[in-house]
Image 1 (spheres, rainbow, N blue to C red):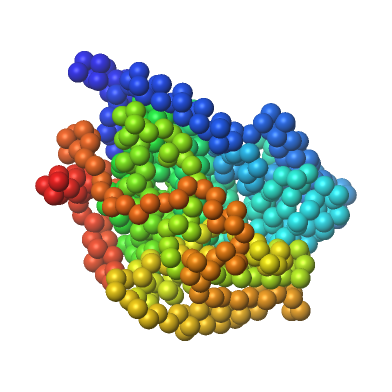
Image 2 (cartoon, one colour):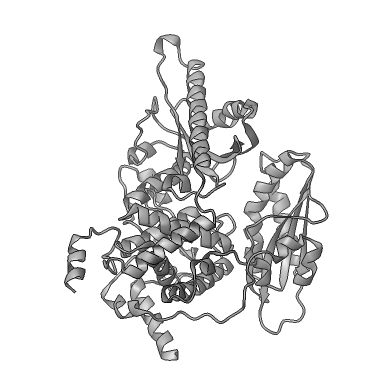
Length: 554
């Protein structure tokens, strides 16, 4: 008791509430953390020294190209007698900045330029520079996206590049990206593009022990990818969302070892009182100095669309936004079910009856369902596949939203992985697994698929990067599991662990006896409208109530 009190008094508070526990790791937690790191290495979660050096070289070269481009553009626009160093820089963010990138992972980055460099310059003159560079391959630009982006490979390393035009005469090398004043007089595209970079920096300031955070996040990301629930564009959680969840657990258990933090991620969020938001810091939606950006802040009291978000997980940097607006009813159920199963496995790992491999190994998606929709895309050239494929992939979740309105469909889950047709290598295939309600005999999905096809055809016409004569064929078909062998390779069908359909219940642990003393009032008051319920109870009180119900049914 004394040690706990000492721990509490010496542990700083992070986030919007008191920690649930400040207990330090036990010997078993330390041993399990060591075995966890060994398992992560076996799964190639860490890159080699050579790959690290290559990434550093690539970022340095691209930063040099950015600075050179900015200065040459400046020279063409500024009189010689007024010449100055305009600066400009390439800033990496995402998993690379957080220190949790794996071997072969792409690098998220942003070009920050002064006020006389426009987004049009970025997507024209800078794109031309990249296109002529022999180290650059697979260059693709999506200028009219919600967050405009260029993707490419530089010396074989995948790079995503965003663009932000600051209201500054020059961009200094020591730019403080967390300075909110940088957001003044920016267009919304620049604000959205800067958000990822600012979130990564702010997040690192809000966790008590960065090393523990990084190890835990590496494991959670690997688990999510191998269980097919890692993709923001397809309705699941993206990298920054998983990072926020792990960071929140680090705040609630500031002294815990990664082996214990992983268990707590699944314990807390498998029974979280959604749609209560997950917050790392307090939301400020009444900034008088940045009043024009207040409407971008997630706030269901003011913004009607925010009331429909199913699993709001809020970014910590201003303007605070929901990182999970793409989550659907089906993907929410899939995520929750996977977390419940993972919690049981984690408990058994701590008991010594299972190993980390049982948690982290890849699951065979095709063993989960008997029915599928195959979405096929055939492009005549790599350029056309890059241009149309990125657009198409980001729209697949729209079909899930259409299918969810069909009364006979209980779950529609996208597999984020792209496959190649076993008979035609030019044809890419994505799959949606379907689970029907009980006792359904005849199912007609023709109208659902036709509606999606019409949406794709209409939306593609407004995408600048898709040329008018783009030679792309699309085909959407219903497939039974028994027929998949005729579509994709036997290797793709049979690899990974076969998933067993078992009933999953949330076990009651020692935490349930302590949770009532800890209040996490994280949900803002919202009016009771439409599909969103009022969330006046605290999240942890609701969690305790759920645990009590499970106990009474046991």
